[in-house]
Length: 496
Ligand SMILES: C=CC1=C(C)c2cc3[nH]c(cc4nc(cc5[nH]c(cc1n2)c(C)c5CCC(=O)O)C(CCC(=O)O)=C4C)c(C)c3C=C
Ligand SMILES: [Fe+2]
Image (cartoon, rainbow, N blue to C red):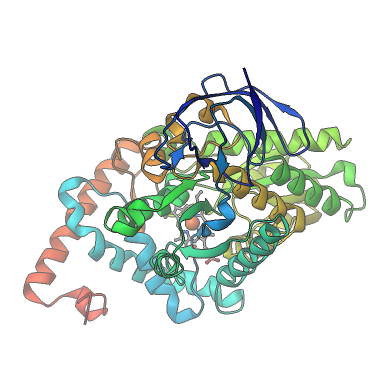
């Protein structure tokens, strides 16, 4: 029996064989020559017609060297010949104060933010118009206080550029695109560019470290719709990295930021490390199966473990911020926790924003202004805040590694593969991921200010339903007569 050593080109998992036979992988090595766990299931049938065989079940790392029972010479197809693209998904933010209401409209028109019962789906847009108009003044105040708009676009575009450079340094030329969910540059714009550039392999990377139905889920849902309707995209190979908070590079970068910020306190050892995560309504987790809370708690554990390894024994706590409307969100709430810590005599607090990797309104205004003030009022004397990761070198480098590691899965149905499920980053195609999470798309509680009354959970539910019917009746009346309070307020007509 002859043994050949086959060196796979970087990122390659597609190859041609001039002869027919079965290839069995015997050994696999990573970049540094360390032996990888032998992928038991890997038996591959190749044909002689020179057609490309996709090793869709390859659970191996790129650039590995594989020894095989030879069936002939196997040419590797180096993916450098492919047009590789990376699509960064993010939320988007209003760039000017005039953008605030239409941005909020887009957000509340999203069924993953307000999921109405089937019969009321036609209400989604009027309701979004109503809520966005009611909320806009408060939001505008917030955006005005951080300079008149969100920095999210600028920072995300800087991250995209930094990632492109990091990939190039790692010998993977790739184009990096930014697709926002609720504001420019919209995901649709990014997709247009991807098609224009003839991208053939796409890695989709939501810029949220933890997965939530309301963030990455919503963006992936939109992508699925766009992909489904487009022949080019249906055939383009892609894979998704749904969450990456567990990556060593991310965990270590966060630990380093915390470690250096602790040094700014007079008595670093006495500082409470206060992780403040963006909240989601409890029903997302408890009824719709959002993995967000579990991932968040796991993420905090990983960062604290890393800090302990570095000899930092500080106490820590996790709370959830930014709730909207009266329904119950994940607890404990950040504001309640700050007051509680003050009462318990905590004197120094280091806030760590943990759901997001750029500065935005909720770090610059909510944490830096509102929560800081609340902390000082609650008796906390020393306050600090860890900056968002932004373009921090190790973090971007690690994202680049995540992309490189994801490439072998491009086009592969990796989530249905047990090995891939167990891998560090559970990769998958958009459709498969959406089937994994939130399968039934149950109704989610709408976080609408008009529901702000009620004294028990059940009263609140019924009041909510009554309010929904009232709003519906009001809208139907207005739409049919063309007159009423919403027209007077300029909320209707929707498209003047
Ligand atoms: C109403 C429901 C909302 C859910 C659920 C939600 C989840 C969620 N959001 C982020 C991150 C961001 N949210 C941002 C803005 C924003 N989010 C909501 C509502 C929900 N978010 C509103 C109404 C707004 C607008 C701002 C405001 O009026 O308060 C932003 C953008 C900030 C910016 O600088 O423009 C981010 C980022 C996460 C991570 C998350 C769930 C995990
Ligand atoms: Fe939000």
